[in-house]
Amino acid sequence: MNDQLRLTLGVRDRASFDNFITAAADDDNAAAREHLRRLRGVAGAPAVYLWGPAGSGRTHLLQAVCQAAGERQQAAVCLSMRGEPGLPPQALEGMERLGIVCIDDLDAILGERRWERALATLCAGVQALGGGLVVSAGVPPAALVAAAPALGERFAAAHVFELRPADAALRRAMLLARAERRGLRLPETVAAHLLDSCGHDLRRLFATLDALERSLLASPRKPGLALLRRLLRETPAS
Image: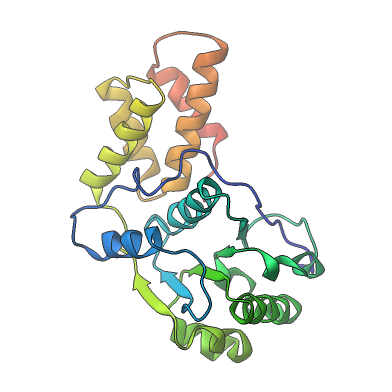
């Protein structure tokens, strides 16, 4: 990776705490959701560190934090550290003044020293100014400290939540709930094929659903397997 990285600054309008589905009301994912629901960005509040494998809901929760902040008229930003080249590390300068800063896939920049330093400076600034800081990674905090001590030490006192990936039943519930919110009625054969094809890859699952919605809006018809297979070929895995 070079010195530039795509920083996703927007917030998906469909990611909220209310539509973050968990396997049980009292599991670890639900505990993380309820903790973040109360986040306001106040002086002295510890950072929040979410970690877990792909498909565990890390990105959804960070987007939900920013969505909730926007509803309160509080300035917030969600930065994705994974993706194609975009902005340089200097683009982070000044973001510490925002009320809430969320950083997704923090471990994607490990080994990139300029990015590690820039993010360590941003995190220190957010905490110094009393803002809310929420990050996600695919590794636990100890691994972050070992790989990038200056960055990892920013989360020594963080609230840490290990998120669990969705099982088959929960992935199905998530897919059908999201489709229903969009007014889509997926035939059983279409839903089953979509779930089988995407497996644990929730990003691909929902990206394919997005593409299906756009295709049906452009040319109203019943969602069928032929259309779905074409969209799956056009939607790469995460």
